[in-house]
Image (cartoon, rainbow, N blue to C red):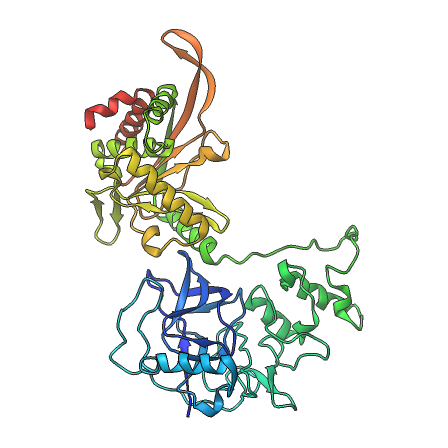
Length: 493
C-alpha cells in the first residue's frame, strides 16, 4: 500500500518566514528521487531550489507560480512505496519507474533531511516523519481536509483517477482541479483546467467575496496573469448590468479617455520578496539611525592613470570598484569607528576588526548587497575577481543567504547610473556607507591653472551615534586624498 507523504516548505534560515513560488520543476505524476529539486522559490534574500527529501511519485502540488507561502505550508505530496500493480505495467516508462523506485526504496520514507540545495543536514533525521493517510476528496471549502490551507494554494489533480485537495472527479474517473480558493465553485464550461494565474491571494479573496469566478476572466498581466484591476473592472461591469462581465476585461475594450469624474485606474504592486526586504530594511534604518551626510569633490585623474598603468602591465584587469574598495579598507583601518554597529539593547558600539565589505548591485529582481568577506586582507586583483563573481551571481539570482549577510561597511557606486551625487541610506545595522558618483571631465584648478580633469563626488552617510563629524570628515578626506594621489596608499601597504 502506498504511503502519501506531505512535503512542507522548510525553514529557509536567516529569519525568513515565507517564500514565493517562482517555477515548478516537476509535474504531477513525475517520479522524483531523494534530494531532487522540485520547486524554485524566491525569498527576501535570494532565489533557491528546494529539494524534496522523499523519493516516489508526485501526487499533488500546492500553490501556483507567483503564490507566496509561509514556512510550514504544504508544497507537494509524494506517494512512497507504491505497489507494483499501481505503476505503469509495460514499456520503457514502466521499467524506468521500477528502476527508480527500487533505487530509492531504502531511503525515501525517511527523507534525507536536506532543506535547501547546499544547506541543511547531510543525513536523515533521527525521527521518522509522521505518515498521513490518504484522505478522501474534500469539498472546495477551505479547511474541509482538516488542516489549514495556505492562502492562494491551488492543488493539482493526481493521475489515475485519484482526487487531491480542492479537486472534483469527472464521470470518467479522472480528476480535474475543482473550484479555486477564490470562488469555491467548479470551473465554467469551456474554461481551461489548471491553476488560475492570480497576482496575489488578495485578488482571490476579492473575487471570492463578490462571487466572481476567476476562471471566466482573462488577465491583462504578463502571460495572462489576473491583476486586481481585472477583478475590479469585471465587478464594475457586472454592477452596470452587463450580463457578461468578462466581455469588458481591460485587454478587450478599446482605448478611450476616462469619462469626466471617473476614478483613475491604479496598479498595486505587493511589497514582497527582495523588494519587500529592501523596504523593511531601509525603513528600519531611517527609523533607528540618526544619520548625517558629508561629501567632497575629488580629482580622480591620477587614480584613473594608475589603473591604466596597472592594466597595461599585464595580468587580470583591475576594476575601478576594486581600487575604491582598497581605499575604503585603508581608511577604515585609520577610522575603525565607522566599521561598527550599535547594540541598542546593551547601549554599546560594537567595532569589528575585520572588514566585510558590502556593495550595492542592481539586478532585474531588485537591489541586493552582496558581501565581500575579509576585504581588508585582499589586494586589488582579488577584490576585482570577487566583485565579478558576486555580481554575476546576483544577476543570475543564485546568491546564497551567506553572500548577502554579515556586512560591516557598504560601498555604493551609483555613478554607474550616470548621476553625480546622492545621500545614501545606511544598510542597517551598519554604521556608514560610502557613495561614489560618476567620474567625468570637469573644469578643475590644477597646480594653479584651470584644466579639464576627471572629477568624482564622494559622499559619506554615517551613524552619528558612533562618531562625530570630525571622524567622518577625516575618513572622507583620507578617501579623497587617496583618490587624488594613489601613492598615499603606499603608506599602509
